[in-house]
Length: 151
Image (cartoon, rainbow, N blue to C red; front, side, top):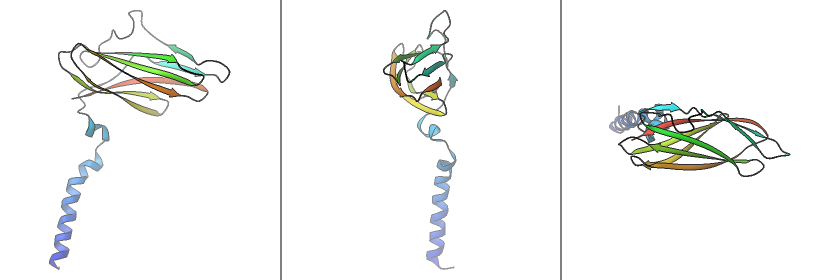
């Protein structure tokens, strides 16, 4: 076997060893150190009718939104508001009740689509928020939230 062919095979083998973990890992594992993943308990249902404003319904406990603690001290409050005939603005508030800073995203599921909403860094005792405009087709839509914690 010629020496150039041996060196090319060795180079290809080394490259494969370096890229195999990247190929088999999920992108979420590359961008977040997942320490906890929990779903919120505030689902929204939205009905879009072409002839009138969107109808928003939700199921909240009497104690109010944001009272339950997720992942050891984070409180999530989801709010929806009508922006137009087929547009709904979802606003997510995250209160960090821990003594440690938090960095991560909230995943919002709309049908089969998952929207990652970055909140950035939230210090201890602080609240962060982000909003997303949803342009929805006529019909009924269910929205859920999942909390992904980062370092």
